[in-house]
Length: 158
Image (cartoon, rainbow, N blue to C red; front, top):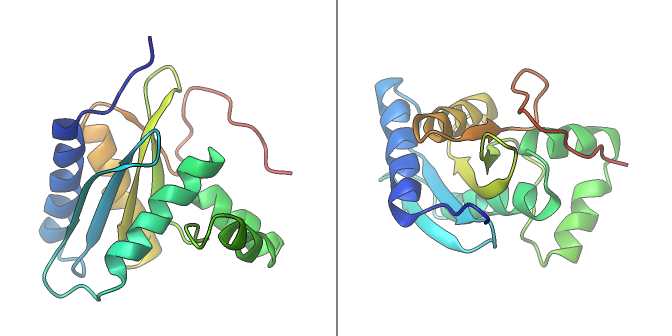
């Protein structure tokens, strides 16, 4: 039976991401958690975020989920092929961005149960808040970076 991400787990992920951001004095953030089907479970923004930050966080979560790869791998691929993200954005109706800050939520067995998008600060800080929050919730974070491997084998980008 497939695992699911509950609403309370998603809310806990958002709370943990925002708590870490406040503790480390980051810029105000927007955080979006999607289930495995790409549906918004929780979306929150802090006072002081730009009006596009929640949309940007949604795109950061949606792209990795739609492509099955953490946002770091999408950003890396975009660096090698400047047309990759514009093509993916076009195909997806504008729902994909090539920025880091989108992290897949996996079970210990590697099953994707959702994703998190964080926007509002620098890419490294956004990623770190998402990874921290996912791990606090007892899941495995797949940010698509070589320093944060997960236990399964992700397909390589062409």
